[in-house]
Image 1 (cartoon, rainbow, N blue to C red):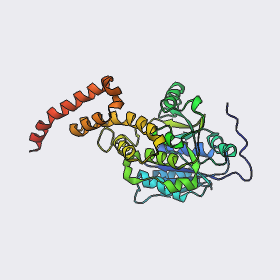
Image 2 (cartoon, one colour):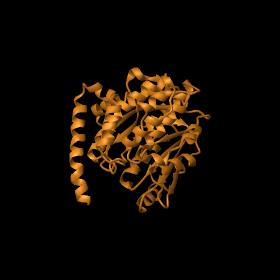
Image 3 (cartoon, one colour):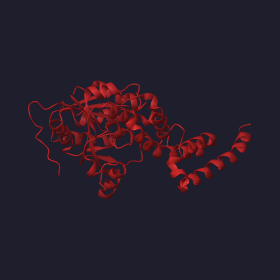
Image 4 (cartoon, rainbow, N blue to C red):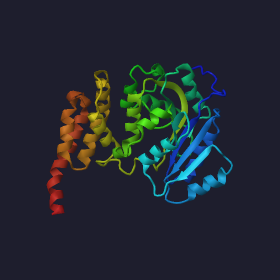
Length: 328
């Protein structure tokens, strides 16, 4: 077990919990309650509401009328995912910022565990930890939780200050919420609208690249809840999908030589997905170019996935004339 120093002192830093929400009043109350139940006291909850109606606004007014730690704002017109999060960062008053989405939860001691790391490592700028996986009701699946964190390289042997902070973001070890970072750094990096649905991956990568020290804690601090209303569902499988934008971002990054192996790891994951997306969207030439450029992602021809994708691309080529006749 990791030993945490006491963080409850008069000089404890204020933590701003940034909570973007959109059309999910049935879930956000549980998220807010998990924030208010923290064992760490010096916090504020900054909410940005992109909802199309007033249900969330009414719920917060009725449920938390005398809660000074909640700072709520309804965005009119809605800002969209990236600008909503960016506005929350700007509104945050705290020394540290933590992001949590409206359908997720914090463990009761989550903030205390993360903020305590700064007492051990005064130069620390970014910290993150493990996520539980839960269904839409909030019931935790412990086996799935282990698989989730292992898939993102969050394992006990990885705990500690990361030797290459930038690698953490590139290989997607860094989570999309439940992390904590110095407010100054978070505000400097910001959420960038031009990257669409992969703005969280871009932010995490840029944050870790800019940080002097990043700490991974092998302890659970948040709950990732799988819901049918996942924000990425609307574009999944299209050429504006998060993975396509993430691939373009990683390809274009200017990196020091010691992070080139991390870029290759990221592209090994992203490139085959992008090839599949282009095949499904009848853009076989683009897909073929990416496949041939990233043969390392297919074990240089020893992966059956390559031949499956080549089959998909050939079918896309065959279907192109028929599609053009329909258009004409």
